[in-house]
Structures are given as C-alpha cells and as structure tokens.
Image (cartoon, rainbow, N blue to C red; front, side, top):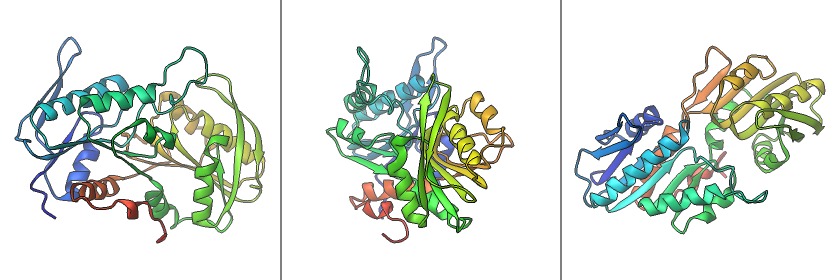
Length: 315
C-alpha cells in the first residue's frame, strides 16, 4: 500500500500507543508541536506539509479529560487550515460517552456535544473503540468506524481459559457484551444486579447465574474506581467462584481503584492500552490495541473494508 499521503499525529494523552501504531504501519509519527502556555492554553503547530494529505489525529480523552479533548480540537483545526485532504479523529477512548441521554431534569447530553465539537473542528470521519453505548455512532452525520477489543482479549484469554468458565456482567447494562464473550468461549453466562450509592460506591444486590466451582470472567467496557468490578467479584466469591478475573477495555484507574484492586478480590485485571495504565505491581495485564488500530487506519486510508477486523474465531 502506498502510504506517501498518510500522516499520523498524536496529542499528549497517549503518545506511546501512537508510536506503536506507526511502527506497525511502518511510517514515522508526524512532526507536531503540542504544548501548553503558562496560562494553561494549548498551542499546536504542525511542522510538516499536510496539504492534500490523509491525516489521522490520535488522542484518547483521558485525564485531564478536558485538556486532552481541547488538544485534539486544536490539532484538527490546524490540519484543516493547513489544507489536509481528509481528517480522521482517532479516539481509542471516547470520553463523556456515559453522558449519552437525559436521565434526569436539566442535564446535558454531553456525548452529543462532543460529537458536534469534533465535526465543527474539522473531523471528516471518526475511528474509536468500545463505545460505552453503541448508539453514540448516531450522534454523528459523518462516518464512524467502531472497533471492538474482543479479538485482542480473545487471543490472550483463549490460551488460559478454563473448561468451567462463566462470563459475568458486573451490571445489567453489560449483559449483551457478556453474552458475546460467553458465545466466543462456549461458557456459561451470568450478571450481577447492583445499586449505585454514589459515584464511587456500588453495592451488589443479587447474582443471576451459577458460578459455584467455576472460574469467573467479568467483562466491562470501562472502569475508574473499580467499585462495580470489586462488588461483583465479591458476590461471585460468596457464591462459590474459584477464581475471578476481569477484562475491561478502558481502565481509567484512580487511586481508589488501585486500593480496591489490591484487596485480592480480583485475581487479574486484563485491560488494553487505549489509556496508559500503570500496573503498580498489581496483577494487571495490559494488552496492546496498536495492531488493531493500525490495521484499521491502513484500511481507511486505502478505502478498504474494516468489517473483517470485527471477526473472532473466523466469524
């Protein structure tokens, strides 16, 4: 494939992932200055010619969320004003995705606002992974390529899976994802009903499914405080689970999360590098999605289908 017109630039949220993607594709990371003035304003300068080029800008909207999101908007504006032919916003982690509806009076739909801002800044298409809710794709009037981390998790878990595996969703909303994983591994399925006390505290109420004598795999798209995961893990252990692991695409771990993960309720947290994760000597395994994103970028650049990237086990 001719990559002469392909340019990839990275913000400061996850430059390591951007470097890995460029190494996989076989091109250097684009030369850009992305810095912060003393007053907190972001400054961007693209230091190479992008006129008529196919530009991809990578940035996960992880903490500091607003700062990294603003960096991305400014980078896209810079590329647009430099006459880039097409600009693709690559968000391995799409922030604000949980604010996708009006579930109480006088609240915004921030996920939609983020979509509007990305388009206004110059995005011609979006590439993202494991959105919290798939309907966010409908917030855009431009093409959205929505990838899944399941092929990456499958390759790792298939080597160590148990014959007595049960896939459990830590909340009711994730049952569809859990069912997909249960189908992949031909495993049992369960879910935990929970009650959220506040933003950092979750109480597990009931477990639906049989986990006695089984190895449990909890699956979720995002964790921050690990409250939902550890509450579900505790309930699974109380119901006879032998081993509890968790597979989570986006691990935006806070100090409270590290405290809960050190309790030993979860034997292993398996996550990806959509957000930079520091294991801190805990049983945290970080899998790279660089090859998956890199392959998607090459196919988008070459105007090829990305459908096969969704396939696991050949279907």
